[in-house]
Image (cartoon, rainbow, N blue to C red; front, side):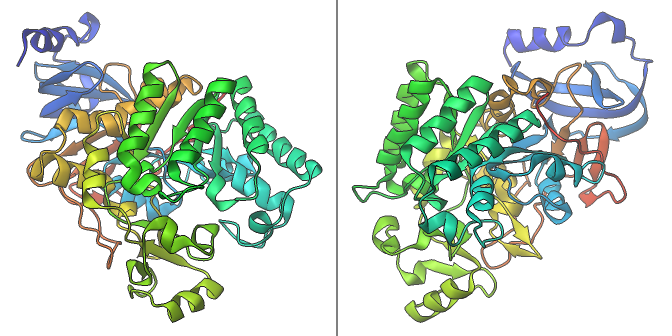
Length: 476
């Protein structure tokens, strides 16, 4: 351990709280405290008062509740920027996976106030959302889809008046405190480049970030992932809007290394751009969406047998694909090479985000196990990324992505005095995901304790019933 870290550990406790006789609501005693922002990595005791971290001390602390966490890592709760599952079922999987804040940033929501009101005082973990281009467009175009579009918003070109109405709904959502603008351009392929550029301009004027599922996936030209990244990069550069590219591996596939090189080059030249990936080798979306329009096999480098029907676990054929495409439903696409997944997880600048959603115990394992999988598979087993870098990718970096426009995120993703007491305790020797493609509804293990705003939501690897300390993450 470096002298700098030792000195930091001695200095991190302010003088007014140095008295070890102070009474705290909760004390996490004797854990290995890791904070990616300061670099602290040392045995410490954490004292919590109310919803805040009140002390971090090398000396023993007294509290009403003292939990011995020796042999475990204590760190900031994970922040999932791409969490479609926004209900109690999903929040339970998130909490057991170490996530204390789950945000719907890609598809987004509209209208915004009702979405937040439906969750206030009822949520196990923190929640929040962008205003979404997809739901706004579905409303204006009178699309018959439920969550993702399936007809009018996919096939019809918007009139100038419809484009204006969509923009008005997005402006209203920003006025109502949404966290930015979410885009799923691939799902609304008739959206013109001018329409998207104008909304980037709006984001720049409102000083919020854009969270973008790009226009195309795969390597086929024209219409490749590289071309799509060039579109949104140009929009960001020309407007000054901040850009976050979602699930880089499932969009860029075997071109991921090239796309990451483009993003890193833009970052070096001052463009405010970030990206994310989930640590699995398969996608999931609605089979009736534009993703699986004619030509999908060539675009995505897949065949029918690479598709797995979520409801039954079966691999598809040409006949069952046609049948389910008419019915509609969720399908998993086994299209991401393992080396591409490892490439993104090992990159210290690529944020981890799940893109997860479990519905009635069915879904993709990323909805239940993304964060424990990073810790168990890519840190411990494969040593593809260091533990501190992994924690940074799952807590500090997502907080930093948001904090310029959402000041309350400056108190999250850190372990320091005054920060929100969103904390997790995990065993680095045992933490692992248990969710599989055949059975996604399995809790991660090795994360015995999770606190949200100073309240235990997981205790001894069990969900604490009857508590709902999650709050809405929102712009003022």
